[in-house]
Structure formats: structure tokens, C-alpha cells
Image 1: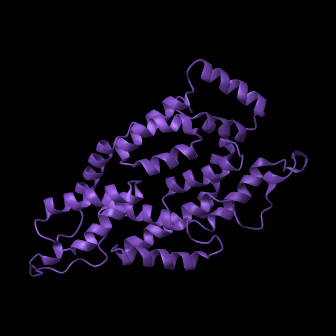
Image 2: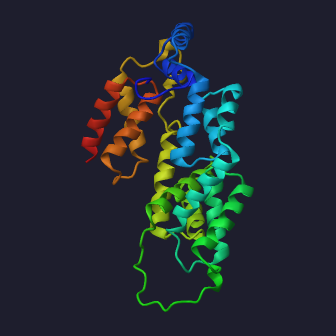
Length: 301
């Protein structure tokens, strides 16, 4: 894991726990890695904030939440977050707005454009005041008059039906769905959730084809990250004496159950990653996971 990128101590501790190492053994190993400088949560936080702010355009609010999920203590997170100055945040927000403006229809209503751009920045973690200030400054640079007052040009060619929006719109749609999913009741059925989320996106101006695709992918990903709600016993909660002896059989049952909720036309590589990840979270070894997933996918097709 450390050869891939820097990791927080909590990330490594979680992985060692998943692999079955005793807490005392894991602590001694992590203490030794910290002693030689391979683990440093303060340095990790600085690197994370710089990378996510510079290359992904994340604002302080989202960055703080990401560090919290990585297990970074406040005393290590705060100095890293303070390195993102108000000036740097404003400049990065302005860059995001300029890129987004290139994808908006030139005849979009001015107020609607403002709402969409402010919402885009808010999802990335920029506070409302900064978002609104940046949008109101940047919008007139591209549109010298409010869009609602701009002269209407005759339409020479009707838009193609079901034309997908640019890829950046697909990304923002996914972020919007992810945010909305946090507010939906876990008891809501998938069909109802799909209708609500697709309706949300279409009301925000996304085309229905793109909206349905994004919602389907996000709901499937959300389901994959949760324990399977089926009749398969939750063997991970059982004492060691009651755990099944055959890891391969257990993995096969889990994959077959999960395959019921995965779209049949999902890209094969993406399906493999999703299923292997699900098995890893259940404590299945990587070699068994890959073997079972490939075998079950081959039978499915």
C-alpha cells in the first residue's frame, strides 16, 4: 500500500485488521513504520490537501470531511487545511467556473446559470459566499449581458434527441446524486429511489438518458458498498468456531447474490473491480476473490 501512495495510519490499521492481524501486532508494526518516517499523518494531510485542491478542485469543507474519513486527527488536519488560503480557494473556484461555463448552453437563463454554477462549487466544498461571489464575477466575463436579456437567435437545427451532456456534466450529476443519496431513507426501494433521483437531475437540466445512466451507476455502487441484504447468513459476525471452512464456497454465494443487483450490461472490468472489492471487504483473500469473480462472470455471459 505504501508503495502505491502515502497512507494514513488509520488506513493501514484498517487494512491490517481486515487481514486478520492482532491489534497488538498491527500497532507494533505501525509504530515501527512511523519511527522510520514511512507513516506521518501530518505529512499525509498536507499531501492530500494539496493534491485534491490543486488537481480535483476540492474546497475546504470537502477536504476536511475527506481527512476525517481517512482517520486524520484534528491537530494534523488543521495545519494542512490552513495551507489553502482564501485567495487560493477563490482562484481555484474561478477556474472551475470558467471550465463549466464552456459547457453551458449560451441561451441559458442567467439566474439558472448562477444557481447551477453555485451548486457545482458547493458540491466541491466551497462555502456559499465564496461560490456566489466567484460566479457573479466570472459569469459576465463570458456573457456581457444577462442570459435572460440576450437576443434570441433563430434555431436553424433542432437539437439531437437524447444527446448526452459533456462528460463534466456527467461528473457533476454523479456528485449531485451522491449528495442526495445521503438524505434518502435506507428503507426506500430501488425503483422509488431511481424515480426520485432521475427526476431531480432532469429538473436540474440534465437530459433524461444521462440522468438514468448516472442514477443506475450510483445506486449500484451504493449497494455494492453496503452489506448484502439477502438470505445469506452474515458469517463475518459469527465466532471463529462457526465460520465456514470453505472460503471458495462462501465467496461464490456472495458473488451470485451481488450479481442480481448489477446491470447485465455493466463493463466487465468494472464489474470485476466492484465484486472483488466487495469480497475483500468481507475478508476473502485476493486470489480466491479473483478466481470466483471471473468464473461467475464467465457463467453469467
